[in-house]
Length: 492
Image: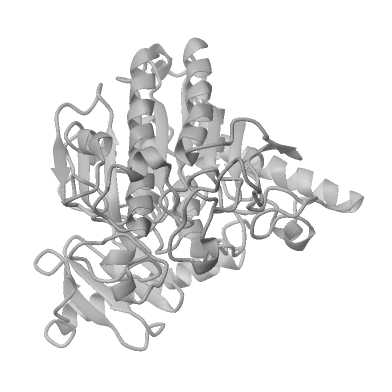
């Protein structure tokens, strides 16, 4: 449903927003008058790369990629060895980060499909009610950002039914694109894009062609300044400005920083390409844009230190799905590595959904920790509201994520609920040890022991029928719950 309506619909829209506000007020405890006011609320940052594979970091064993700042995070906080994106593609995972719910509950089945419904209670809205200032920076991909001009994949008249910008989902400050942009000079079409194999920056002194997208800061407000050079730096310029202003006001902040790197078109400036002289042209750009993004992660951490808020800031990092894959895997313009994991982006095998996952929070997490417990992007919301004592008396909607607060406190040994997936005719369920997966919509299933066989090379379905049957029943129940949500059962 579009967010612009006739005059008769405007009343319905206002009533819907009122009902949602009342639901938030009754479902989530507020901070007013609570004893928790005598302690400082933590700042929260969700960072996410785009198409960064499991093995595309130094700390996960890449032999050449330079990611010193992510490596430092892995040696200072919690390193998740089994961290999962909620989906093997972009938009659905992003929805899970903000709602704690699987995107099949509200109709975001794939990239550029559907939008984040206004009935959903987002993490930004919940934290605003607790006194946070909120900011979104980078890729949105949960709906269009303009109804008036042609923009990105769906912006303008053609996609007005899917207008759902971040400023209508709880974010006070935005610097957001609808979808992908080049990772260098993001507003300009890069050189070599027509072959979709590799790109280089264009000569700014020559004739340049607009890429066809914009950074939006509000309704009909597109930014036209400071848009040259590394895209990750451009995003971080805005994010750090927001953080400094909030810190100066001594106001807790919730910041979402969703990089475009290393989603194609992958382009890197010469200073980053030079770091990889032994690679071919495409790989130099791919590796270079990842190192440029890593540099901005380091810059973010320095800014937090200088603002005096590093210790009380929980900083999360992950990827939205696995890598595009290599030419050898059948992808003519892909790159990235999932290491020993099977599959890549768009697949529910491990390579498509298991991604780098990190958390640093110096005041609460002392020294490096590694966990093999499965965790997921859907866990962000329930974890954060639990840590802030904003737990609902009764959940307003069915949640797919769980609170990782016990894990952060060192009291979690196993995951209490499995992680379920559905995407493009594939379904899967993962618990602490086993995984079932079907690539034909549930007609047949494979079973893997992910502890002994993370590469999913040995199908145990015929050897362990009881485990298979139990997990299939659990997955079937979950799919029925999602179907009920999708049909409006939650909102009623």
